Length: 115
Image (cartoon, rainbow, N blue to C red; front, side, top):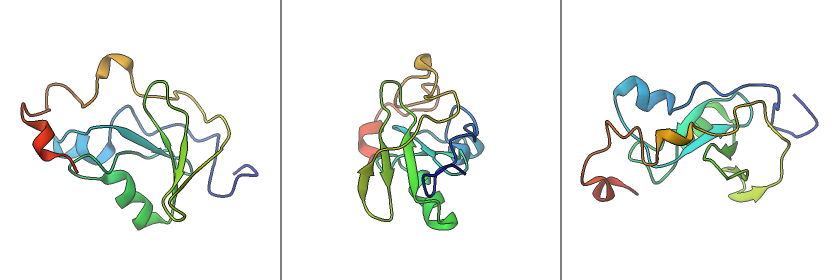
């Protein structure tokens, strides 16, 4: 762990999609990366809200956006944005994956399922 409490910049992400949604055949709106262990979870707008569930279950409160062009960090504990270091690559999901995604599992009425 580096000097940022709750952030391990050397840990790579667990994959390119939400771990739990991939396992369950689900879908997500946006992705978040746990800054401590690299777990990829879906955002709170997504039906399953797995990133915040991971934070609550593990105490890993800091996430970074895993979306192309976004480099912000969020602390679920303090409910605030914060600055953080460059994390181990990759820094975002594949651009061709789309959002919401994955496109093969997103229902046509997906807007009716978001929070």
